[in-house]
Image 1 (cartoon, rainbow, N blue to C red):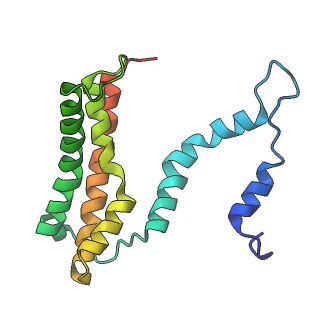
Image 2: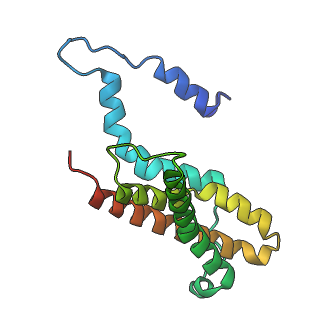
Amino acid sequence: MLKSGIHASLAGVLLAQFIPIKPKDTSAQSPLYKLEHSIEPWVNFIILPLFAFANAGVSFSGMKLDLLWDPVTLGIILGLFFGKQIGVMLFTYLGSILKICKLPSDISWAQYYGLSLVTGIGFTMSLFIGSLAFTDPEYQTSVRLGVLIASLLAGIFGYLTLRLTSKSS
C-alpha cells in the first residue's frame, strides 16, 4: 500500500470492508467484535498516544530538568491542571445551585470531580494555544513541557479519582 500511492487511511477503510460482522455460528461473537476488543488495549495505550504526539508535533529536544522551575512551565502546569478542574467544578456547581443543570442521578459529586480532573488531558489544543501565546522560540520548550506534565498529572489523578469513586461492576 505504501508504494502504491494509496493513502494508509483509505487502505484501512478498504481492509475493514472484508472483516465479517456476523459470526458463522449464532452462539459465537462476531469476528469484528473479537478483533475490536483484542486490539483495544494496544490502540488506547500505545497507538493513540503515539498518533497524538506525532500529529501534535511534540518534540522532546531541548527539554531539561531545570525547565521544570521555569515560570512559564509552572504557569502552564498550574493553569492546565488546577485551572481546568476548578473551572469545571465551579461552573457546574453554580449551575446546579441556580437550577440551570443537575448531575445525573447515578453520578456523585466525587465522580464528577474525577471527570473535571480528566479535562486537563487535552494537550493538543493546549500545545496549539501555547504556541500562539508564546511566539518566542525560547518559550516553546517550556510550553511543551508544561502541557505534557499537566496532561500526565490530570490523567493519573483523574483515573485514580474515578477508580476510587466509581462502583465496581
